[in-house]
Image (cartoon, rainbow, N blue to C red; front, top):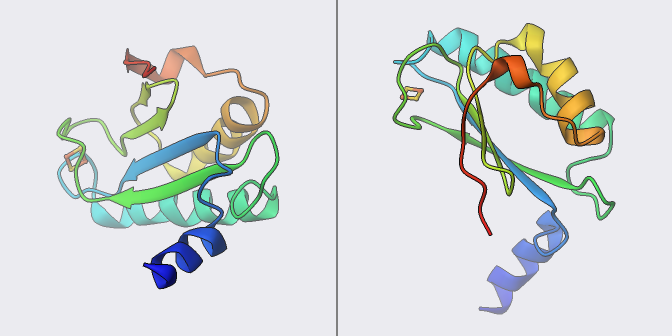
Length: 118
Ligand code: FES
């Protein structure tokens, strides 16, 4: 158990305000398109100091194999807001990170469903 706690602490678990799940396909999008989006998300979260961070925009990220939408991907869901995004290719990731994850303003035209938790 101590080892688990150490790992969680190193990852900053307990400090996050958001969790982003990105599906890398390959039913909602080709796997290479999903992987490019994931690489861009990882890079920008690191550059903007949002991952492994304790600030107000600290954000955990998880790459997943399917979110059960299976079309118009890459599909992204952000909690706790529960905003579901479609078409989240690499090209869209910078604006998504800046506007939603840093400024807290979801990008309405890319959202197809909502399920706020809490
Ligand atoms: S493969 Fe991406 S939502 Fe199912």
